[in-house]
Image 1: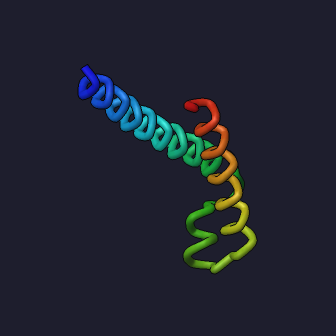
Image 2: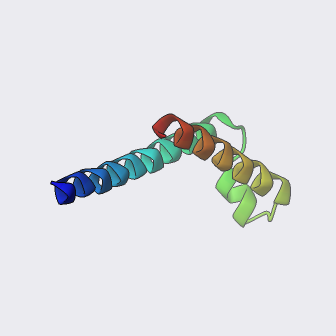
Length: 71
């Protein structure tokens, strides 16, 4: 019985993790589309540190929201 409960808990963790990652990627894609410049291009080609910090802050903020919603 305990093994079944542990398996269900592990499966739930994996499902919620995958769901959280999918939501994070979709939300970043939406932000990428509504911003005037291509965020990835600005970070990689133009070495724009401000855009990199903004992108990192956005990803952290969305990840915190997803984590608290799942928890």
